[in-house]
Image 1: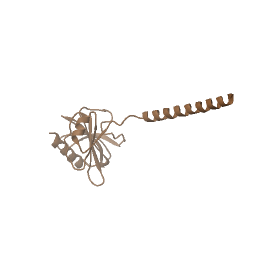
Image 2: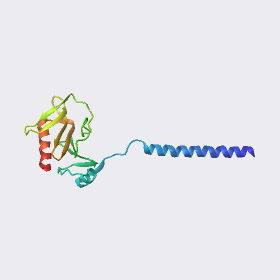
Image 3: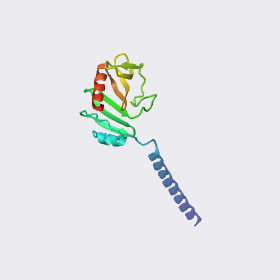
Image 4: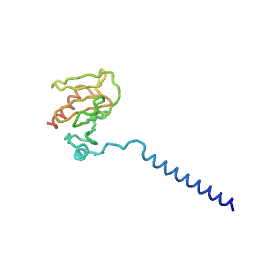
Length: 166
C-alpha cells in the first residue's frame, strides 16, 4: 500500500513539475524582447498620421509607410537596385544617432550644403551619401539609402520633401 501511495505521489509530483515548468517557459518566452513600436500602414498616410501624431503628405508611387509615436517612415524605390527610407520626426530625437535607424559607421561625417543653401549632416564615403539629416520648420528628417546616393540625388529627394511640406 505504501509503494502504491509513493508511486502515485511521485507520478503526481512529476506531472506538476512538468506542467509548471512548461507554463513558466511559455510565459517567459512570450515576454522576451520588447514589442515592435512600429505600426505598418502599407500606403496609408492617414494611418501613419494617427500613429505618429502628425502628418507627412509625401505622395510617391510604390511607397510603404509605417509609424510609431513621434516618427513616420516612408520607404520607396529610387531605382531597381536602391531603396530610399525617409523618416520624419516632429521633434529632434535621438541626438547622437539621428532618427535614421542606421547605426553603421561611415568614414566621413560632415555638413553638406546643397546649392539652394539647405544644410545637411551626412554620413558618407568619398563617393556616396548613406545617411543625411536636416531640420525644417515643421520637423526633422533623415534620408537613408544602404547602397548610397549622390549629392544630386539627395537634392532631388529634398526637393520632393520640400514641395509637399510647404
